[in-house]
Image: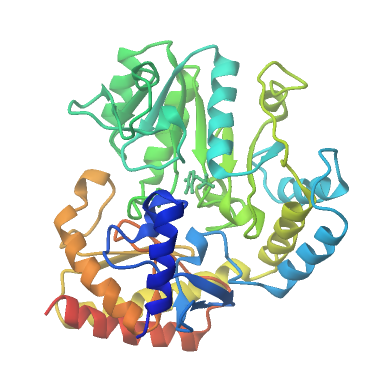
Amino acid sequence: MNRSKSEALFEKAKNYFPGGVNSPVRAFRSVGGTPLFIKKGKGAYLEDADGNSFIDYCCSWGPLILGHANNDVVDAVKTAVENGSSFGAPTELENDLADLILSNNAYIEKIRFVSSGTEAVMSAIRLARGVTGRSKILKFEGCYHGHVDSLLVKAGSGLVTFGNTSSAGVPEAFVNETIVVSLNNQAAVEDAFRQFAGEIACIIIEPIPANNGLLLQDKSFLEFLRDIATQNGALLIFDEVISGFRVKFDGAAGYYNIRPDIITYGKIIGGGLPVGAYGASKEIMSNISPEGNVYQAGTLSGNPVAMSAGIAQLQNCLRPGFYEALEAMTNRLVSGIRKHAEEKNYAVKLWSVGSIYWIAFTQRERIATAEEIDAASMQIFRKMYHELLERGIYLGPSGYEVGFVSAAHTEADIDRTIQAFCEALDIALA
Ligand SMILES: *Cc1c(COP(=O)(O)O)cnc(C)c1O
C-alpha cells in the first residue's frame, strides 16, 4: 500500500502543528507509523491522500452514526450555509433541534447548545457547582470528559484520593477539587462521601465508559450512584457525549432507565459539525444565564449550519428500527471475530453495546475498571492495527479506543471486515 502522500503531508504538518496534528490521538503515537491524511469519505468508506480506500470504524470518533457525507446531512448543510453561517441571534433551527431532542428524551426538560463535548462538560460542572454551592467533584478513573482542567486528573495511589494531574498546566488548586475513584466500586464512592461530607457538588461518569476500552458497568452501580448523590445533596452528571443518540436515541439514561440530574451531549448531536449540549430539568436549567446566575455563553453556539446538520442526522436516528439494525450489524461483526478467536483459542475478547464495540487481548471474562486493562497487550493491538490497515480496514489508532458501526455499513462490509480481522489476528498472535 502506497502511503507516500500521507507521509509527505505529515512531514509538512509537523512544521505547522505540535506533533503534526490538531488533536493528539490522531498522531498514531500509540500504534506507530504515519497517520493517514484523509481526502474524503462516503458512507462507510474513507479515501486517503494516496487514493487508498478503507472501511471506517472510527467514524470521526463517534459522531458519524450515518457514515460519511450522508445525503440528508449534506443537503441540510448546503441549504443552511447559503442563508448565512452564523448570526449571533436566535434562529428557528435551534428550536427545531431542541424540539427533536426534548420530545424524544424523557430525562431532560431544557437544553443549552454549545460547540464541543468539552464545553458541554465544563458548563455542566459549573452548573452543578452553582446549584449546590459546593466545589468538589467526583470522577472515575478510566472515564474521559474532554480537556476540562479539573477533569484532566487521574487516580493517585490510595483507594480514595485526590488525583494527580494528567496534564501540565493544571493548577494544584483544581486537582484538589477533584476526587478520583475506581469504576464499579461502591465502597470507594461511599468512602469519598464520608470523607468529604457536604463538599461534593457532583458525581460525573460516562454511564457507558467508552474512552478507555469499553468498561461496561453494572446497572446496580449506576443506580447506586443515583441514590448516593441524592442522599448527599450532590448532583449526578451523565456524560453522554459518546453514548447519547448512540446506544438509543435517549442514550444511556434511556438504556438503563436512570434519571441523572444533568446530561451532556456531543459527537452525534452535531451530525459531524461542532455541537455539544447539556440538559437538565427546567428547575436546574433555570440557574443558567440569563435566567440564573451561572454564566455560560458562546459566539457560535446554536449556529444554523451545525443545527441543520444535527437535525438531519437525528431525524434519521428516529426512524423506526434504526437502533435495532445498527445493533444487529454490530453483533454480526463481533460474533464473527469472536467465533474465529474461540476456534483458535486466542486470548481475545470482544464487548459491545448498541453499535459500540471493543476488542481486548485478555483472558478476563469481564473488564469493568481501567486497572484491569493490560497495558502490555497493546503491543498486540499495534500489530493487528497495521495488518488491518493493509487490508483496507481503518480503526481509531489505539487499543484503548472503541469502534463504531454506522448505518452505512452493509453486511458485505461487515463480512469483509471479519475476514480481515481473522487474518490480522492470525498474524498478530502468531
Ligand atoms: C469526546 C468526549 C468528550 C469531549 O468532547 P470534544 O467534542 O472532543 O470536546 C467528553 N466526554 C466524552 C464522554 C467524550 O467521549
